[in-house]
Amino acid sequence: MPDTAAIILQARMGSRRLPGKVLADLAGRSVLGHCIWRLHASGIPVIVATTTRNEDDAVVRETEAYGAFSFRGAVDDVLGRYVAAADAFQVTEVIRATADNPAVDIDAPARVLAQLRRTGVDHIIECGLPYGAAVEGVTAEALVRAAAETEDPFDREHVTPFVRRAAGFTMLSAMVPGHLRQPELRLTIDTAEDLRRMRVLLAPYRQAAAPPPLAEIMAKAAGVHQSEPAAKGRERAHAR
Image 1 (cartoon, rainbow, N blue to C red):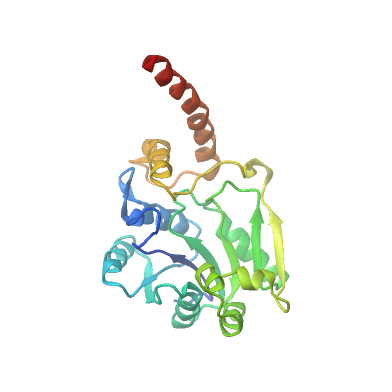
Image 2: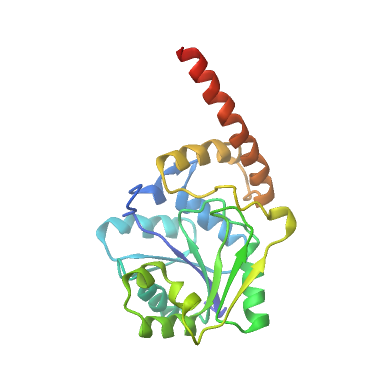
């Protein structure tokens, strides 16, 4: 892989709240498939970092079906998995993404990578995007340092908290473009209800040749959220 930057997308079958969600059907693709599809559109290589558990053989097969690279590492030490994946592919700049965000902003990886390179900081996050639409940028060097300095299970599981809080690391929070600022909007999949809502939201794109822009999904999501209270009100009226 010639580029020094890559998107490392963490994915596994063993979700605590919704096991197997990464391969759940979502408008004709798996949830993982949507993530890879959208992240590939950024033009930055995608590496799916999964675990060595047998159940994650299916994650590797799905990764390969969508043309992404795969890496297998520690189950609970996700920070260690990122460090090992970056080392295996000789990546120096990591865009971190997670496989529960099938509406991730297509343009976010390139924005974050450009700012990471321009500023020279260790870590960059964007503020203002819908919940589930963002990625974060971090240097591989910072991840290696963090892995050497913390054994806290929370830090190891969530990858970047130590980089964000510990002395000796530099970070930047950047505001996203104005038309994408809607942080109250939820576009992630953590529960069965989230999955149901995202199936409704992405159903119109079942036959799409290219992933839709985030702004278009946001507009549709606003309509879905507005219609749900009315629908529930009708259900309550019929039940009386």
